[in-house]
Image (cartoon, rainbow, N blue to C red; front, side):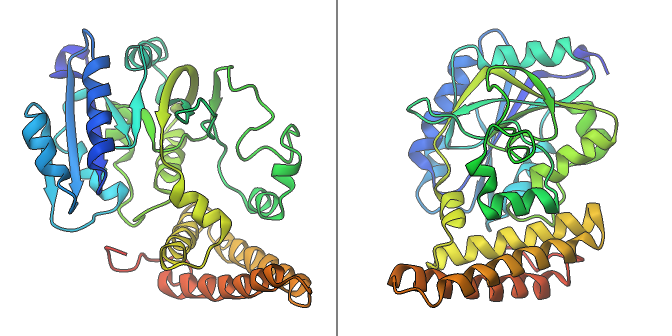
Length: 331
């Protein structure tokens, strides 16, 4: 299709869930950076209770606002927005992410200059300029073990140990990669139509990994462009999962991550879904054995947390029937 076949240059799809003030700042950044581009902005609200949709309707009447009565999750909510999008490129933007000067213009320019690119991403930073993982490689059982063991963090400059997040590479160099986080990405409309939208079985986590894998399998490339800078405030949920806290929220997010991991591995690697579960469960068990007899009460508490994580892993296996199906949504 030619560019004249589309009503807009870019359709920006933002999924929102109880992030009213951040969403306002996000939308302000989109309109500020639209420039001469024809930009369509779509907000899909996932049953927020903080007044987010009312704020959008009142302060941004030009936005196409779609309200869901239930939390659809990340992928299905974006799919709802995709169905009303009419841009030659679709931009996914988290409600807690903000475009910086020239970021949208550069995104379109890069995609125009690389017709084989199906999806691209930029350099994610915190408000303080700290770098966030932005150019990533597809998960593997070996890579997951390197992250779990702490070796990836200990040897970030190693191409072997640091391969999952490409920590060995300069963040200032453009590169063809495997996938980019869903906080910001630009997708060629034809590529998305070719491979289909997000797999609705993923409620949260791994949905963007799965989409990028399908886009690459279809013959398109995935790119990281460091001159596209997007400020991303998120990370609290993922930090909570990584620190393995056993709060109600942390437990829920850990279960969701494990479910999605099993769904992803079963879909793309078959029986490796069992292997990745076994590797993670064995790692937690070994770590708990090492810590359980410690005189340090914090280490003993960590040992109990590890044993509990094994039970969550087993629950995820049961919930997904070994990665074969997704539990009833919303999770």
